[in-house]
Amino acid sequence: MTPDVSADGPDHDPNAEVGPATVTFQCPACHARRRVALAKGSVGGDMRMDLAALQHHLEYATCPSCGARNAAVVAEHARTRTRDRLMFAGGYAALALLAVVVPMIALLPPAYGLLHWALTLWPRWRRRMWLPIVGGAVLFGTMVAWVIEMPRYAFVVPVSVVAMVLWPRRDPAEPFTTAAEQLTFGDPLP
Image 1: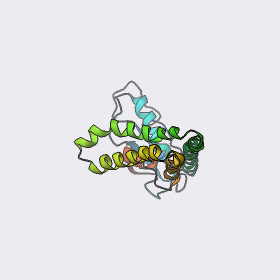
Image 2 (image 1 turned 30 degrees about the vertical axis):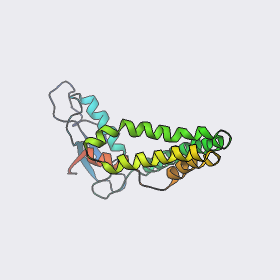
Image 3 (image 1 turned 135 degrees about the vertical axis):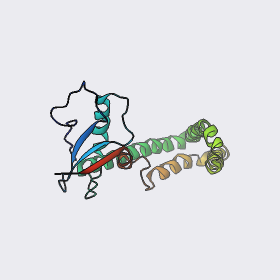
Image 4 (image 1 turned 45 degrees about the vertical axis):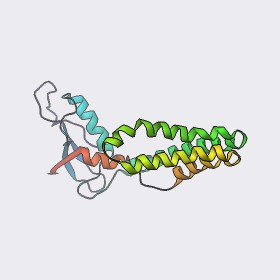
């Protein structure tokens, strides 16, 4: 979905008082053209920043006419996500192999998890999010107890993290959803 990044026409004066930045979006699948702007208004009052934000979100835009997405961007996002998951899982698999020799090294995943749990404890407590609070304490406490009580099987802790990382699930930070929230499409252009 390569947008035409001309802001409000060819005679646009960058020093003039303008409203929110808009660009022309043309879908490569159905060739529909529309004006598009940021849904939340200006990023910081600077037209260049607005156009940069629009350009970033337009990479992940879904055509409002036909629902098509840029196939190259979808494939690149899937490759990046798969690569990141495999690298993360590979790191924890290496940690599991080290835990066979040095069992106490398997305390690193629950230590990292407990650190993250402690840093997010206060905001979760204020929002009364009891399940993540109790669930995190039980999960990471169980991991620590497992490593301390059964050092011979300490490698199971990093292996369980590998299994959680490789378990198929939806991408919570999907940029296509974010782009749909950030962009406002106008009526079709001729």
